[in-house]
Image (cartoon, rainbow, N blue to C red):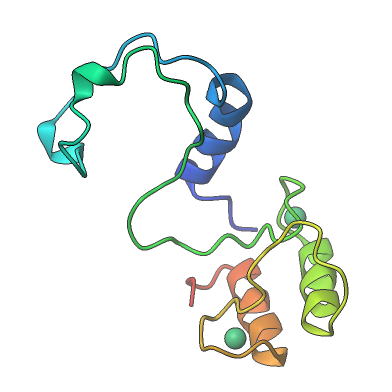
Length: 119
Ligand SMILES: [Ca+2]
Ligand SMILES: [Ca+2]
């Protein structure tokens, strides 16, 4: 079974600890991580953290039911969502990103769970 991308694991661990808390200090390891210079970094201290996210092209997350495991329950969840069922985790059911929500998304998830690459 594939493991969640490390960054997803880190974000899930950090969110309950960081979101809503005031930013006490900010140290940039590299200026290349900045996406904007406005507002200046010095003005961020004391601001409340509103959320965490990753940047870049996201790898797929096969844990579509968001229970921390990648297994047959994720397949059942996606089958149900692609069939018009409830989607309490709010996933994008277009797992293979082809613009359609159909059985090809379930097939793509099966392939990822089997150790294949993300679509
Ligand atoms: Ca899961
Ligand atoms: Ca699709």
